[in-house]
Image (cartoon, rainbow, N blue to C red; front, side):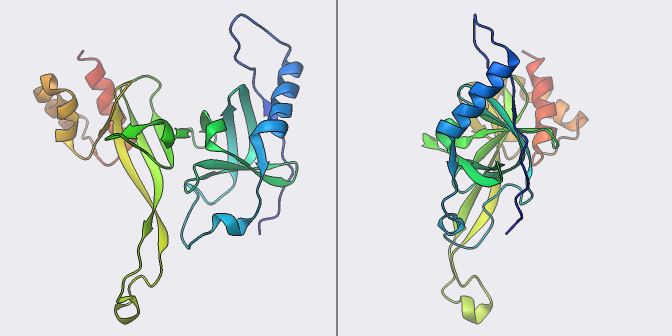
Length: 230
């Protein structure tokens, strides 16, 4: 198991309308809240490994900035757990977890990425699993759902070198979020469904931008241009 390294924790200013506090008070308050309410101990690595396969968005421990209900805390080492929609961090030489109901947003500053629990969103009236990666500050924008699913074992796996046991697999889907609704995006037609009045403009824009409809960053560039048409 990875040797735990010492964590440096610093909290950002608590966002509070009409009130202001000293920075030292903010830091102490958010840290105590994390210790008392938000940071639960990781009970057992066995409990989270119910079957083989990846459960983390990235296997490496990376710096994370986690927005809790009352403030933001920075951890020098953390992971995003897709299987349980939670964040695992190293805090005072111990692994701790932050449950999804305590998570608002998660930033990976070294990768310039922003995430939020996918359970906050529904597609076809079904809550999503894993995390949403957000591309853009304002709606409409592109969001990528990172999640894991169970690939079932094949009955003839031993004979044909197939999957002989259930295992977890990582997957992604790109969505257009218009501020209230998620629209699954796989091709240009899916974008046109959202903006039928701009059908011809979307065709021209996607051609001029050489849009890659499987690349969320490329899709976000297209959405930025479509926003300017309205």
